[in-house]
Image 1 (spheres, rainbow, N blue to C red):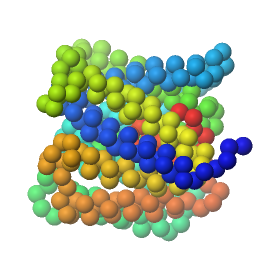
Image 2 (cartoon, helix red, strand yellow; image 1 turned 90 degrees about the horizontal axis):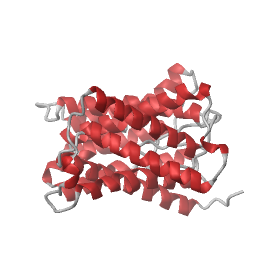
Image 3 (spheres, rainbow, N blue to C red; image 1 turned 180 degrees about the vertical axis):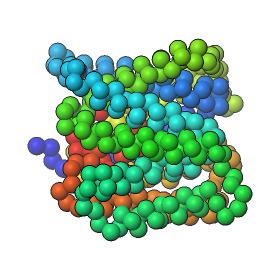
Length: 328
């Protein structure tokens, strides 16, 4: 049995959160260079699938880890489409139209939806603080959107952020079932594979809208776009998944989720430093972000002991409800 080392687990979660947070800014730079959201989703999915496939083979050559039975296909497809295709694509749309920190706050409401599903869909017992968490988060989002005046946020961006939250909630629920049937490395590998197929089909249906010429370009700062795409694949997807997975060997799932809430804070700071004043949040929005995170923290701890195991780290966020067996 692995010896638990909580300090190491916290370091891994923070490291994963930093990589995911930086990934938001890197992705926005790629989008600004001319790559469209569906294209970046396809690049990320195909690259991560190839990397995780090689990792799976290298770790256990000849093992049946990657075998897929016919009855598993619907789950793998649904899991890949929601969490690995629609979530990142909607997130990319959101960050292309809003500051990264705000987009991530909207997406980060997903755990509240999962908690509500647990209460009303699965009829699990929850503590009263769930409702306090929901109230705080909704109030926080109202501050972020500054609803008391002329709304300054892009409408499509807000819808994309909320859509990402809904898809992320579906991903959490499906993941809870998936991890009872497969190890997480193979589950994540095939989910990225399903996402890559969805990306290819989307590109075929849209007649290949958006060329790949921007990959050969450089950003205004002189960074090759292809290098930034490499970050999105390796350090923005594969590496943070592995860190989050390893952390769950040393920390309870709920602790991983709460510590992982450093991501929106770091993401907003990195975006402001790298992308300029257009990413800055005013005092009301900063206060709203704090309320959202406080509400999520309350919702995280609302389930009573004995509830079914929660779910895996999200594509761009460490899952607020965690997961018990992760090796991706």
